[in-house]
Image (cartoon, rainbow over all chains, first blue to last red; front, side, top):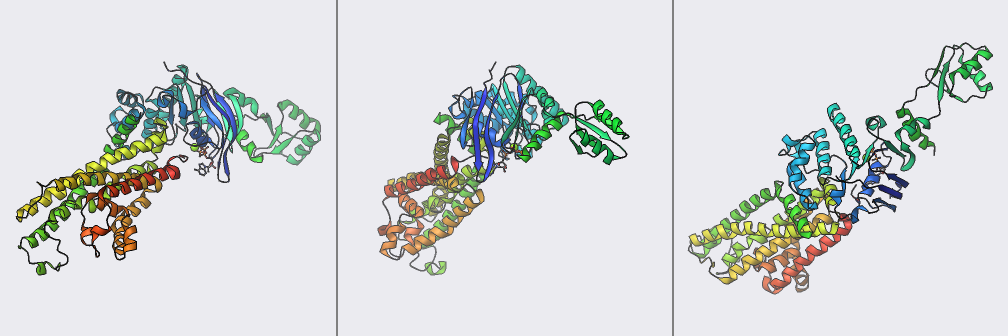
Length: 300
Length: 278
Ligand SMILES: Nc1ncnc2c1ncn2[C@@H]1O[C@H](COP(=O)(O)OP(=O)(O)OP(=O)(O)O)[C@@H](O)[C@H]1O
Ligand SMILES: [Mg+2]
């Protein structure tokens, strides 16, 4: 059984001209867990992963697998399987030939080609030219490529893009199985909800900077609790809250008060003699917590 | 390790259709040209065709005995653009289809990958040379023989020319690899190959022949070096001041062509190959 290595990023930075795509990023990814690498479009996820894989040279800092840079791995494909954008295929080549080329280049047995095609459900399409593949089939072929060397580390950039519901379900199970076998699984996405069901840990970046890291559950405590309160006389309610020293903002369905307990807000309204038409705790999902973290970085 | 990389490059080359499309066009084009011109010149030499009727005038008629090598050399003097295209497509295709990503993931030693590609295309260029010779010598000799003119196929000089043609075509494919890394944009690369080989260089070579000084420079042009390596060409025959004086020795021509391939490949390594793959 292949063993997962710890992925470690230390102070990694990349600039493209004036754009700082990745800004002094440090974090580790542990084996035996699925780690979600999250951030909005343009946050620097792909650039970070490409630096990890030696495809992009970092401006400073380093990224390693068990202490070794990708370049220094004695058997790269047998250590790390990586799937980046779905478009890295020659359209005129069959899937089987595509895989066979990289198996040859990495010194892996050709028998793996048929095996990985079967693993990702492309066994019947191996002789087809990739140019005729759907987006989901390309994603699967990308995944097949990562499995060629049966690696202990999987690095997947937005693997769920373009998959149908069945494919999504399949890949979620696949990621969990891989981690359960002790492999290191790092999977990027710009949507938390996409990977929420399969990740143990999250690393969230925005504008190239780390904004949060920790187990998935740590996200819930990230957002300040809020209470939604409304009144036919909103102005009176607002002044009552202000007098009581409660911080609030105007929401679509009422005022959003920063408070943990709706009872306290109800009490404030009651003592001020303001009629209350709505009062409840704001249910913030993980996605909201994620968005809050990511948007919070805008003001930085 | 290098051997593995070379095997992977061969697999890349043989698993798309471009190699046999180019080889088929090469064969057809050189076959037609060699057959046609062999018929014309052999016809004139054998007296079957009246020179004035052929419209070539007297100065266009090659001297007796130089006809077979001239026809055979079409393989490289005209066909060299095909291995260049094959080489340029092999490198620019990696950029265009973003296959550099899986390539460098499977083998992060980028210089080794490029070296493997150059070696692979060198060998493939030699194979293209064989295809071109099959057309120029195969069809050319048949036609020449048909007019009763000596094909010179028993002559060791002819076989030396054939061997040097293989070498020239191999080197041209390596030049293509170098051009492809120097100009990774596939369309730009193809335009440069076609414009340079079909238009710019022939003009430069022709123009340089008129004075001694420019002829000294002109013989270092890649096409001129290639013709010098092969030892016969329609260009040297058509030269106004006499091609022989203005040409390099065959081995010098080979070295010059090798230098072009090496310079372009090494330059391209720094220009594009070792850059970020994004
Ligand atoms: N080759 C490049 N040249 C210039 N800028 C680049 C290059 N590659 C990325 N960038 C910039 O770096 C930033 C980060 O891009 P990156 O592709 O890493 O983001 P991402 O998080 O993967 O986004 P997405 O979710 O859209 O895939 C963006 O601002 C992008 O414009
Ligand atoms: Mg991306």
